[in-house]
Image: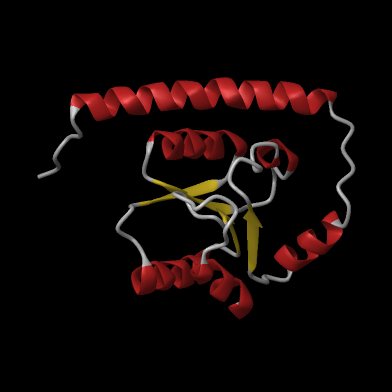
Length: 150
């Protein structure tokens, strides 16, 4: 028997989805005014075409413009279970990315095993290297280890 989420959680999800819709509209509008030069895009596309595994890493707060800029790359974006994470998941849906929402208890070996499994089905993972909860601008060791294996 499936248990429905509490009403407060459903309301939060609806609000997060609305925020994501507004941000997606604003990002697409902003992108229309940008003069963009994507240097070495063919290198990334070639790696994806050859089924190579990629880890796209960025600092928290520095990724928002990436949503419209790399639209079309079939990436799996990892985020944390939070209101912010739900907004990010909504943005992912609107820009064609797959999103995995991680629970806060997923750490260490369990997280590493899950990431390894994700890399079998998704060739491109995107994640903030300073993790969902920080510390700000300090790369998490597990992600560095994962990148070295790729």
